[in-house]
Length: 99
Image (cartoon, rainbow, N blue to C red; front, side, top):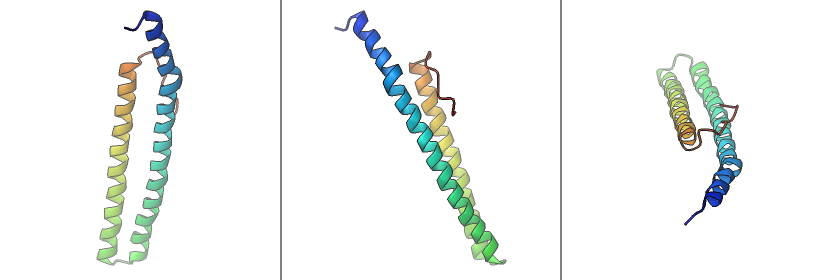
């Protein structure tokens, strides 16, 4: 069985090693999603601008724009769930200032 000292050591290890890694991973995922969203926004804008009234091109632009919005919403929810899980298991841990 674990003693009080062993449990304290495990909690300290989690708070000083594992949670900052999870935080950094979440920040990197967020940055990657912003990059992909910017690329897809440019692609959607190109479809709109170069379509010159072509209904098919405008439809493709709208689809890409809708996919960007949905992807942002899903990613935001997943990152918020991750934050909630960490705050549940480590309420004294100060979460990353980037969120």
